[in-house]
Image 1 (cartoon, rainbow, N blue to C red):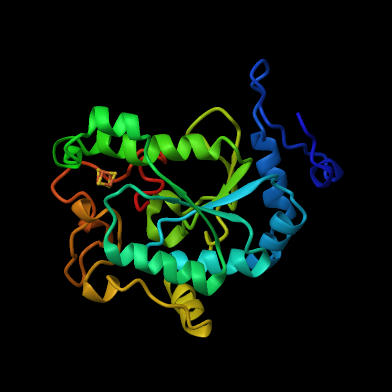
Image 2 (spheres, rainbow, N blue to C red):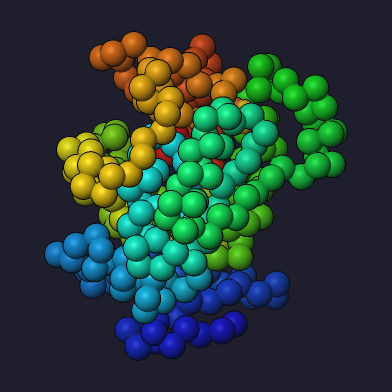
Length: 261
Ligand code: SF4
């Protein structure tokens, strides 16, 4: 295990779990201390502390390059563009999403890391490429959940783009929390949790950030193309995801937490 000097200074140590001793990297207590430390700080001040001072160890951003992704990517790149940006290339994205991803990578100088499904598993479990049509949970597991789990095992913390206004289940989310999708004790960091829709729009305008091209075509929430439908004005933006299925998330996060990846 390799202690991080900055963390030691504030009484916390990020651990890389080893095979014999699977001690979690961070505990609930660490998350509380970080929340207290940055209470009253701006998003930029918090990002600078976390990224520059390595308060959360090795970091990555997980991004779908969806409707609002540009704001978090712009903020993180403003502090350090070398922070890895993990993108799950499911093989089912809209061509517009891939083009938008490339545009943002170029414009913001992002350190893009493309994650792909395991080729053997794909051939075995989704040879036709149509698993999404009869078993979307299984399709998400092969194309999203497993590749991301594997990639995240190399990091101590990941940034999400979650905002409190998006859902009741997010209303009380803190900036720092323990990622409960496994027992590794990684931190999940929500830099935009207290941003509202107007602040997001203002950031796009102020920094002249490009919008995802599909928003103008009636897609307020954008995921894989077979599982994303247009939404009528006034409808819940999420209603266009996995339309017709009793499914609101891809399995990477707990239900109600992050349905948009
Ligand atoms: S969102 Fe749809 S196409 Fe994409 S991985 Fe999940 S089920 Fe498959």
